[in-house]
Length: 103
Image (cartoon, rainbow, N blue to C red; front, side, top):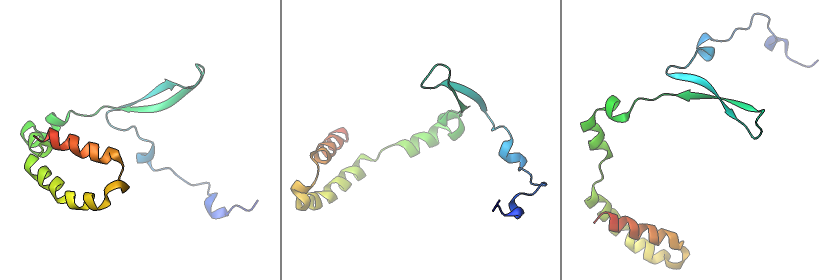
């Protein structure tokens, strides 16, 4: 055997944190590609963002500054005109949709 004896220590230990249950989680089994196969997974319960973050702070960080986005789109116009037909059509369509959604 060519294994390094340094790594075959009889007194090796696993850190307790590595095997401790995760907070707010439980082990579940999901049916695999066949009914007799059960895949172990971990289901983690998370707090609602509004509750843990606060409603006002959540609104502030999740709001969109339409004016800034419109300016950003305008700044890109010249570059996109130079690139022209080398860009996918989907990009132009997405920019148009974004522009309309900003009002």
